[in-house]
Length: 312
Image (cartoon, rainbow, N blue to C red; front, side):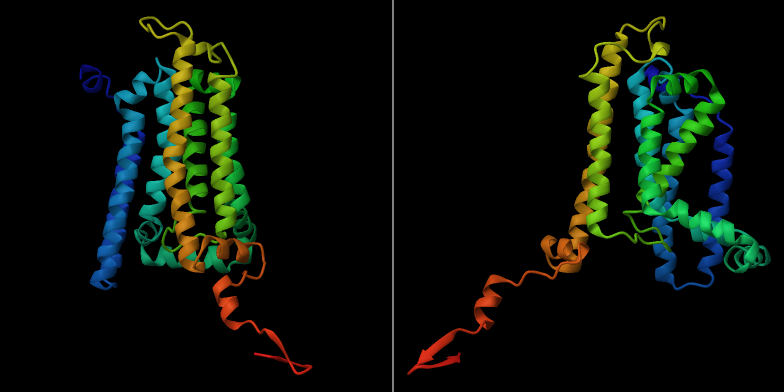
């Protein structure tokens, strides 16, 4: 228990997160004055998910988890899983976009909206926004961030340089994680636009990439990749065993987050199309195959009567 009670730290980011909560509450109050009670309750329920994301983020950067990540590679991998999966998923489900927008004064909000959506000067910004939100950029950037920051030279750079570690490594995990999970989960006022076939392929391929990364770090090598964990005083766990445990965490926890979302996508497709086969047919542009029994009931059967052919 002492390991959990000690080594808490203060991170300036916690001040930013506290101000974010205040702004979100201001936006909720302003929206509540112009909404029905049911809509207000729905936004409040979503806000709890968003605040849960902020709590997990604080635990990741200020709790003993961050301290022990300097000594154990597998603890560092727990941080990465939280930053790429837990926090972004809770942010997406929490949908803080509209409340945070309404935290701005009404004149500022209107001026910003006119500029972003109507001004010709913001054309490049709108195109950039569409590109960043596109499904292929979201999928590619998420997997690229996962792979690049586990390359030994890049990982060691982040360990040596705190600014790179916090703003580039952790920042890229959070940003690409939110963009990735927006492709699968509704986040008012945004909804996923990709079909179930693409969503299933993106989840399965991402899980396969994580699996191959984990296998590379544990089964396909016999040495530790990361020198920063090789000569730490007071650590009895061998660097390679530490790396193997971290790889197992990536492997298992990747499945833990991906499989429920995969099940949600399949269930959503079946609800919309009546069956998974129907959803796949629609996704690939093929006409649905008729039911066997429906075909038996409606097809015509030629019958020959006294040399004459008719149908019944």
